[in-house]
Length: 360
Ligand SMILES: *Cc1c(COP(=O)(O)O)cnc(C)c1O
Image (spheres, rainbow, N blue to C red):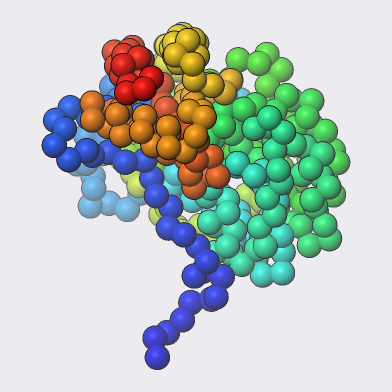
């Protein structure tokens, strides 16, 4: 008889990331994982190469330099920051530490899939709350919380829908949750948001409620391959995460890359300006072609083709030109594709391909 894991683990479907290859096509344009289109910041590439010289040394397990750099950049106390092997690692540690058998994890119906996958690993019961207009329904989340709820997971903006909850709604959510429910604000796309009153989570964490903010270097910073994320949380939660994380959970090249990236002062402004421009141009272009494009506050567009067949056909047509986007059937959105905002040329390639798709 084989050894068996805890039963809930066999209900976890392996996460399938955005694809990166099409057989027989030479030039591939990968628009399937919301990676920044400009590559890593040049200073980060240099820092990674330099760190290679010291690859025989264990990294600084306290991540002091990186936490100080993040703290200085965002105006946060470095002691209240924990860094992780991607924000995915931190989300997992949080869910495993605060969830578990006999508890419930509440999330939005089209919320980020990793919450459900890790929640099952932890043994949580997953409660998915229907959305309104592909946007998180705060009243629904509040109503879904019961005595066993320990975690409410919210990506804002959300992936894959691109929708943004107004700050007043996020604040109302926190204020309406019991104090012993941890609100996890996943702000992976924070940099792209333009709403003037948007708080990626810092203010709510500081307000003292049980709120955690997670952030990533994988999107606007162009460092997805380095696996680097961080979180900001009340001291008691930081203490828990420092107990359960691996002692060397972030590699030295990743930390060096993060520090160097933060020093590139106009990187975010340049990337965001490009994103804002092309998000609007792509939205307009795809809409003109008769497609429904959901308003996006991130670096991607959830585009609805009206039927699962039409979405599949569009996907195949894009692929034939080397353009890889993301099917979102696993998010219960089978009629849609999620398209990352690429370079100007890449965006134009998508618009051109869509303009002459069969039966388009
Ligand atoms: C990309 C993404 C993450 C994960 O980022 P990593 O830091 O690369 O692990 C987390 N949450 C959301 C909503 C994302 O889209």
